[in-house]
Image 1 (spheres, rainbow, N blue to C red):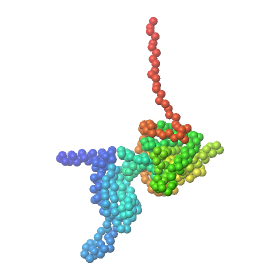
Image 2 (image 1 turned 90 degrees about the vertical axis):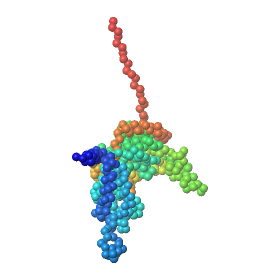
Image 3 (image 1 turned 120 degrees about the horizontal axis):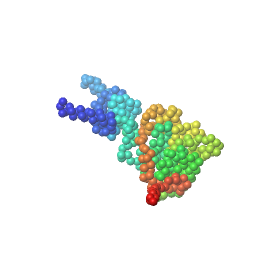
Image 4 (image 1 turned 180 degrees about the vertical axis):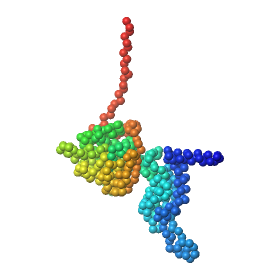
Length: 451
């Protein structure tokens, strides 16, 4: 056995071990090279097999007849750029006359098998240009967030998308969100990651956790206000509505609608106010919303109506006042009573973890993205944290949240406790924080001296 054979066998063994144990490392060391060669070599034949080529034009056929040459072959889209990434490849192609971007979306599964990639998604960049984003391995199997996944103003990275990109929760773009999922589906871990990301921003966190606060109370040092039962929740929501009215009065005073004021200085929300006048934005997190909507007595029904009315008002009017909603629950349907569907209609962003029935998936996506319903009910039980995320535009994508332990989340919340703002309207609901008690050393009684 020659030295070259030994080296080749050693490299092959290392590659197989990396592919099995560390797919991300395998992709960065061996996978990128193999995938680039495979795509470039197979490109023309794959496009032809997937029906993504166009027949030769008439002038080419006429020229071939006049020159007595063979009939030209069908032409594949022109490759504009092939760029490797840390999770896959990005192929940008220019469409031929007669092709449509939908053709590539419909053929994405065939392209995935033909090019031996984990996933292929297609989107139109501009007219006649389509981008194929391919992942070389299952990025949702072992989620690893990139170290430089920075956010921005009210923009938090919370999960990885199946196409290898980071999924951000952008409150400026989609102010209010609905998060549904069955028990042990990863819904709480998603919320935990969200709180950990928001903790580093200049934002006020308000929580309603009717499970006696077991989910949000450990993170209380970063919360401006918190309620752990429906009776406190209704008072907290009423206080938020009053605070929203005060913010609108501030915006009204600062609009300055005069003829000599430039258009860019006219404001209709808090983000156009000067920095020294801008109120602190608020994110309201509601855990298990069904506990707020259920009732058994007449008094509880009146309380329930006040709660739902306040939530609907905050969802309809809160965006301009810098109040954003995150509503979580196992189910969110019309059986929870009047006003629920009106509230759901205001929740633009939708995230559905594993559900127990198709009806629960329909509550999240049935009215905006029917294709996402099938993807939701196919989430496996052995992959907690996997979810389908979409919005009212009908677009959706599979995501998975990295596992974040409660201890780690508490440490992050405590590290940013100094950022917790004080809002006078919510002072009555400030969470009671346990004080650090010093444990005195035990006293040891000396034994009496022998007589």
